[in-house]
Image (cartoon, rainbow, N blue to C red):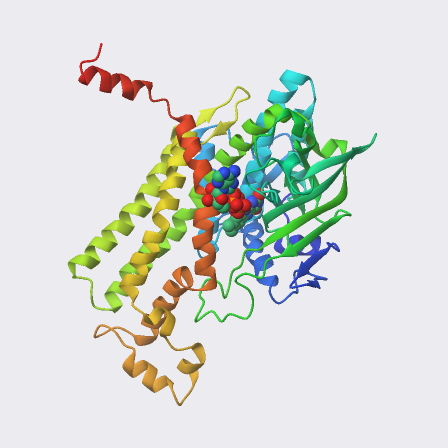
Length: 480
Ligand SMILES: Cc1cc2nc3c(=O)[nH]c(=O)nc-3n(C[C@H](O)[C@H](O)[C@H](O)COP(=O)(O)OP(=O)(O)OC[C@H]3O[C@@H](n4cnc5c(N)ncnc54)[C@H](O)[C@@H]3O)c2cc1C
């Protein structure tokens, strides 16, 4: 039944999941005043599959399944596949006004990483995980599922391993095995979109040691499985009008604390169970895929920031000032470097022995560091060009009121010949990108999304072979 409509997708998440928002049980996320926006945002992805304009990009024909499936569930095998995947992420993000359509893009990276690792574990230990992961991928593709990827454990004291914590459940672990499957307990933090996805793919969050076998677990479960409790973050929530919040008034992403309290997982959904030696490579492989998608999803946001910077410089009449040119050039370079690196990561991809293509890990991690280390500077430039009206301007009602509209239009104009209301709309776009709750959310996301900055730096060092550069330096220094 591949390729669901938005309505079919919405119906599928009215499944009795144990979801809480501000301490209250949510009966139906599709009708909840705060969470509904996130559901509607996710619907864009499902609508793309049926829209003649996007169908060829959003879907591919799968010869094994015998019908079209979401491109996200097709395993990339070449640079072209990665470029198409990147384009799909970017176009989706554009339709989401700069906010990534999460529910298949990043989580499906988890499936690709698992399939690579599962075959390696099978080769070393004759486990049979590869076939399970493949069957699960087909299940996701054929049922056109929306997924979450849960890797980040709650973790407690960051300097301690999972078994050394105050209690044993800071990291998700296996508490029991039965003839039918495993029983897991623990919590994953900050899991995106779980309020409105169908299933959760769980993976370990760090490289584990021999004594930590019980934490070396990966599996997939329906979000409404018995024992799962979801506590949604209220960050950037409901009731925002789309004049003051042109993005967050229309779009939303959610995260949950995802609690697994003795959740049963049948064997055919278990993809790792005790093979601790493979946790490090699995985390790395997923991180590389995740960061590639993450980098692709930043491009629309950066284009939006560049466009808003040009517009506000024009409305404010400062386009010819040299400091403005400097800021615009910085923003252009920041965005264009991101595009070039992401494209290069796809073109210079690495293909593993089973034929699966991965964005070049060194370039992907360099791209991610470029984005993360520059984002707050980009925010600062944009705020600088816009002015303090970003946070001091009038509200929607002031523009509508017969008592105040005239003053707002008369006194908050910009360059001669420009429209005041339009100037305020651009101002509000910049506010939403840099100074609203949503602006705060994307700034934190720029630091911690797809993993925080330090692991990315370690990946750069780990993927860089300095011998050639050192040889060059030796030769020029005349060292034998
Ligand atoms: C918007 C958003 C969406 C997200 N979505 C998902 C998702 O869908 N699935 C998912 O699995 N995760 C998700 N995450 C989680 C994200 O991967 C984590 O935020 C990130 O890995 C950092 O972990 P943390 O938040 O626990 O911070 P911490 O790891 O606690 O980081 C705080 C600081 O502590 C440092 N630190 C941590 N451990 C150590 C150590 N051992 N030694 C020295 N320094 C250390 C870090 O470098 C950092 O400076 C999301 C995060 C955000 C912001």
